[in-house]
Image (cartoon, rainbow, N blue to C red; front, side, top):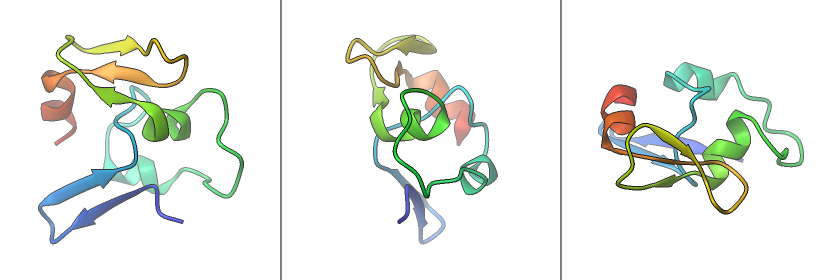
Length: 77
């Protein structure tokens, strides 16, 4: 099952958000996704992180993933 996709080379779609452990799309390709979602790590972040108005990455109050701001999106893109 896909955890992220690039549509028509212009839209990046992910279940949750970004991760401080992931810098490129290739990093996402390297994730072993045939498993239960762990309590922490890049797969967890992709599933449970959320965009926010914060600066950088901030631990999410939901207890999994991060909140991340515009600067993180711009850096990833």
